[in-house]
Length: 141
Image: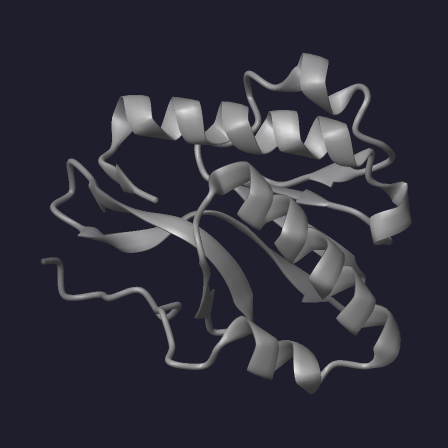
């Protein structure tokens, strides 16, 4: 493995223990998103720091750097929910048109609040992201 390791790693904290410490609004958001991700991925949530992770994958870059990271998941930031779809969003423009108001990062989509997210479309995005991630890396769900 490369000398630099991921700072974000799985923890022993359960999602329910993490959720207990959230304010009422974020608690409701976390429960709603965790249900969508659990139902869609058919896998148990693992906390990676403050990221709710569903599944994982092992990557190895041409540079020699390798490691493990969430296959998909979400985090509740001050600015709103962040959804992680690891292959990135280059090929998901058709899905993103109907997901609700958002901003994009390389592998993240940012929302102001959960109510802004069209949840059936989020499920489509999660499935598409996992399908495409599996084409590139071994994924464990």
